[in-house]
Image (cartoon, rainbow, N blue to C red; front, side, top):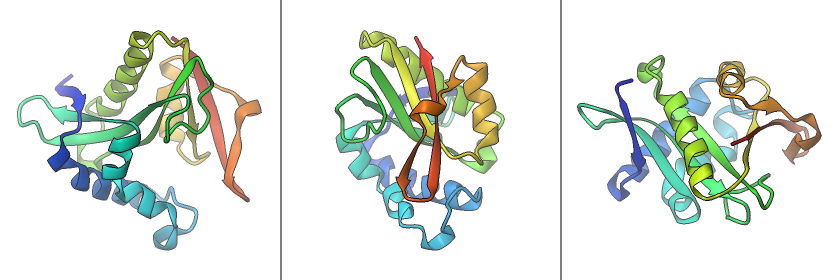
Amino acid sequence: MDVTIRRARDEELDGIGEFTAAVYLGDGLLDFGAEDPYLDELRNARKRATGSEVLVAADAESDVVLGALAFAVHGGTYAELARPDEAEFRMLAVRPEARRRGAAEALVRACMDRTRELGLGGMVLSTHPRMTTAHRLYERLGFRRTPERDWEPIPGIALWAFTVRV
């Protein structure tokens, strides 16, 4: 694998927000397209960094950011579903030109490692039903669909839950 996982640097946050929003929009993952109010949240990686750990997958040679996500624990601003013994990650995005290099998998594995480091027993994540490629990755890493934890952040927008014990 030719990627390194590390914390996002302050000077990278604005760019991370922009490419995260662009990825979600470009991949058709926003129910309201360019008018989706979630775009503002996706763009605001600087705010995410104050309420979560923003992790990046960077090219091992050039250190260019290939992908990013927000890692949060129960009770944190960005923890939507995590219970007291859980962590979660949100807003996973990998630049289209960097896909198939293992960046997403490395980021998810880093979250699993971080969860263990914190002494927590498991992880939970929310995902849109259309994110089928991501679902395959999560399942390969041991996550399982947990339909009883599915939810709607706004009425009519269903998100699926996946959990794993670490």
